[in-house]
Image (tube, one colour):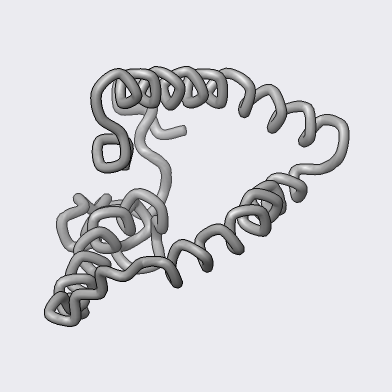
Length: 129
């Protein structure tokens, strides 16, 4: 967006300001998050995004009304979005949802070697525990 709306020295200044504010946010955000969790509750973290959302919503509504370039030839690729969702879900499920779909060890249960005896493994030098 910076490249679209700014050019020349104004573009350089905008990129510098964006970089500065992003760096400041990366430093301050963990401090605010840690303080709010320590002083209030961990549940407060879920409401942090409400304040910026309420502040930005009217601005976005105004920008949408003023956007005169409406191209009806561009359509949303629903099939592509669905396939991307399924693919990313399939990649993340084994690591985050152990036991629910792919066996209790996070991988395919059929590929897991199975013990021949139901008890614990033998101790040192073949001694049973």
